[in-house]
Length: 359
Length: 228
Image 1 (spheres, helix red, strand yellow):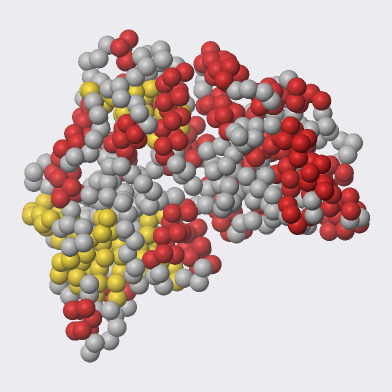
Image 2: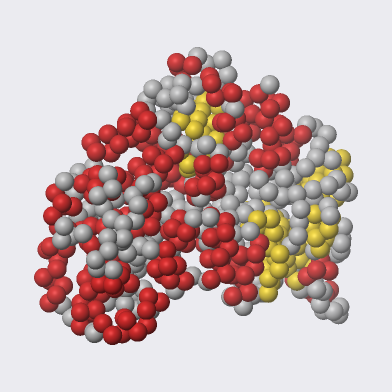
């Protein structure tokens, strides 16, 4: 894929990886390419991995991303979210300045990508957020061999092992069967998680209508428009309390501890998240039915992926960097934490949007 | 016993008394003997897990994980037994095999034991399930003298500590408090008898299956456990 550049690079000295990509205040900056990856501040040219609001922000001059990511940004921020946009497909390679950029599926949410940046002989993969677990709502993660792998570490502790998401959905369905007079309220991030939970419910044979909080509707309908089968969905707004007995409603996590829940009959509060693996996290949120369903790789997924990329150097960002850096070093890999500020739970930046949508 | 683990999880998070009762009722209706007997014993505090002491648990996990990673994880989770249960290495082969097909360690043991006694040590050197491992351990301790266990103390992990714990602490009841039951069950998953034996189920969603098997096998001499 990079033969062209390898040829021209022969007479030049090899670049250090940090000459290609360097963390700066605005995000991960590629000087030779003249762009930033997932910048947290407005920049002239942005290359974006996926549509979560901590990675895809409005206000950049030009944005390069997959069609789905651009569409989601448009839905969330409005038509004028960027000066100009350019679509790139998985597997497509584009030359930007002195580097070439190629997108590969990251398996995180619909349209999510890993970005391979190649300059001369050195290939760096910025994976954004990724998961190696099956997900009926997005293209599966693709392993990209590289020299430097930039990995997230959201669940970068050995206690986070997610297990099979379909087993978690079975738990939810068992609870619905046991408490037919109660409503089940499932907290799930509105981009990716909610749709995956719905798809898993359908896979498990649940064919009753699923109700949606107002903040879920736009993105969920967008998923449907991209051909993701989600069955019959109904807005929960305006539905009588008694009619919600025995039903499942998806809502943003912030709404499940809100006055909003009073419209449900004795609701069982579930929360679909990798954090639910740890009891204290579930208790903090007052969750009654924790569902360990994550759109990030778990510890085993992170370590297996790192090993499989065959990268000699690992940069670890947003999450539990220390543990993963330690693990990499114990495996004889060069590793360092990348100090990037501004990434984390998508939910935190999503909350205001939620309120707007519901109010 | 995965079903019991699920019950405990639900009970731990469910605030309403009537809903708790519904969960318990449904469990006892749905699950057969002897599992629900163990469950009843566990819920009412009739099972004691005297070997699962924090020091033992620390030693067991130290032998299996990187100390730095354990330290970071413990800091994050904040509870020793939960941290260890979550970090416990998965076995390769039987990772998803739990006990639903073999719900009765006692019945199991009674028809397997004579068989195993006859077989050479190597034949079950790496039993997939805890019961076999423990049996083997019992034979090991009885064949070797107690001097070695006395000399190297509890940090020696080649001979499973639960048994020595039993010998050493013989008279003291050393009850692990049963409330909240969830934690106790999680804890009892830990005394994996032999490092060579792989934990029968390391699937984290069901932390108690391992523990309950031990509960069953260690208490197999107690008449009550099997017949409730």
